[in-house]
Length: 150
Image (cartoon, rainbow, N blue to C red; front, side):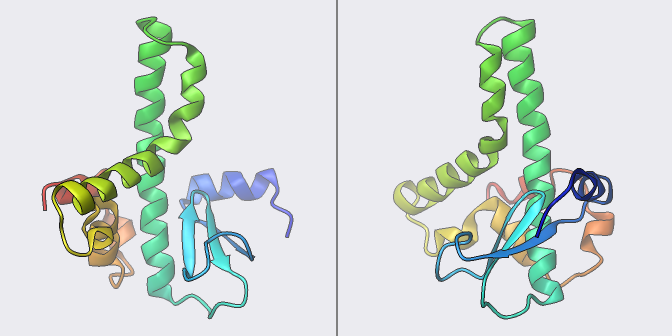
């Protein structure tokens, strides 16, 4: 399926994700993963429920929020304060996944929590609200932050 610029802009403006089925992303054993603006679904997997799509779309919102803040911070550090090269701004799309990985690692190996995947703030927000199909309409920006200390 070809993804055109129109689809990308539509996704941005409507805050919807674009579903892509393939054999590579997500890894085997996973049903779907969101890498905004795309919702990758494993080829041959069952159809996603409305709750599955809602869960992954919540992750899309989270990724967009972290991306915007990362770009602002990296812009200020590189262009305004000359602390680092502007090339660091290319790291912004990865900050969400770095944060996710670091929080998971901290919860697993330092705090030693059971089921650390479910304790990551991004996952807590998504799992808590995946069954509320109207959640995204009233969701406040950075709603995941309140789950950081839980």
